[in-house]
Image (cartoon, rainbow, N blue to C red):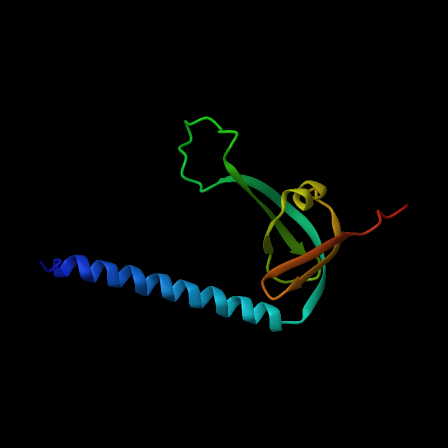
Length: 121
């Protein structure tokens, strides 16, 4: 018995989309590996944590076992677009909005942030 043609097309579409996503991620990883490490003077603009996957409704309570994601938005002090980075929890906890310092990034990948010493008046 032959499977219906629509089912075969559906499976083919899933395979094509999965392959496309795989190659996009691989290409981005290669570009990041080849990019030089940039050092930028930046300020922590904001940070947030949210459950992943973010499929819960606003009315639902927080579930303790949910996986959380941590993001920080850095604002370059000189000029340029904001840079959003997804970080580990330990790094995320160490940063506070308003912190200034050296942001190191490689392509679109976060490398590190070193807080500068506060200015003394």
